[in-house]
Length: 413
Image 1 (cartoon, rainbow, N blue to C red):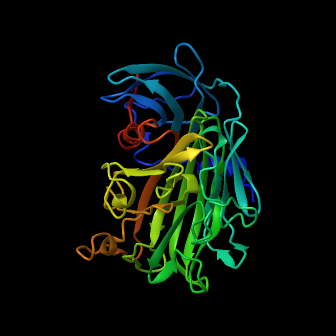
Image 2 (image 1 turned 90 degrees about the vertical axis):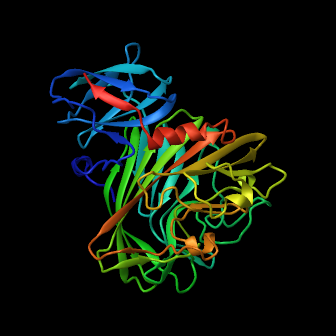
C-alpha cells in the first residue's frame, strides 16, 4: 500500500494553524542562504516543533545554529525543525542553506503493511497505526487506533487489552474492549454509535492514504476515512493528519488533526459522554484509582482525579509509577477547537478523552452539547499528545502546552 514518493511529497503536511508560522518575508529559496530568527517571547521554550513558510521548495536543505547542524525538513512549502531550547525573552538565529544536504539520520520512519503502519524514531519503536478492522476474541475493533505507544525510555503507555488477549498482567482490566490505545471515536453521529464495539455499532473505514512520509524531523500520515453505520453506509467523511516528531527519548509527541466533512448530508454530533475526538486508555499504573502506583490525573485548572471529570480545561494529564519511575502523558486541546477549552471524559479507572459534545452529562442537564455540521461544510479538531518523564510539574506540561498554543515567532532576515 506504499505510495510513490513524488505523490507523497505533493500532498505532504497540511499544517495546523497552531503549529505553522507565516514567517515575515518568506524567501525564494533556490540557491539561497538565509537567516531565520526565532524569538521565544515571554516563556522559555523546549523541544518545540516548528513549521515556517517558504515561497518555494528545494529538494535539499541544510540548517545550522552557528555551532552545529540542525535536523530539518522541507515539504509543501514549509521548513520543519525542532527548536531545542530557548530562554524566555531570548532569540536564536539559524543559517539555512537551500540546495545543500543536511546530515543524514534515521529520524522518523514509517513502514506500511496491509493492515498497519509501523513507526520508529531513530530506529526505536514508537507506535503502530492499525487502520484495518480486526476481530479479536468476540470483539470487532471497528476503528483505526495507535497501539502500542512508547513514551520515555521505551515505556509502553497504553493498556494492552483488547489488542493483547493472552498473558496479560494481573493489574490489567478487561473491560470496555472499545478502548483501543489511542484512537478517535464518538458515540452519536447522526444517531450512529461510533464509540462501542456492540453489534449495532458503526465503523470508521479507512479509504486511502494521501501521505505516508518520514524524515529527520517529522513523520506524517494523511488519510481519508468514512464514518459509517453498522452496514457500512457512509454518514460522514474525514481527513485525518497525524504528525509524529523526533524528540529526545525523554519525551514523545504526536499531533492528530481530524477534519470532518458533511459530505453525505447534514451531520449531528450528539450530546453523549461516550466519546472522545482524541481518546486514550492508559496503562493501569497511570490510573488515578491505583494507590499502589500513586496514579495522578490532573487538568490545567488544578482539578484532580474524579473532580476532573466533565470539567473544562486546556489540557489533562495522567501519570504513575512504572517500575519505580514516574511517567505520564497529557492531551492538549488546540485553542481553535470547538468549545475550547474542551470538556473531558476523564475517568479514574484509566480512560482519558477530550469530548466537546457531552455537555448534558457533564453539566447535569444545564447545557446541551449537540453540534450540527451543515451539508457540504467541514470542521477540524486538533490535539497534541505529549509523553513525558515525571508528573505534570516535572514534565512541564503547562509550558509544553504554551509551546503548542502560542508557538515562538520566526522571521526571515
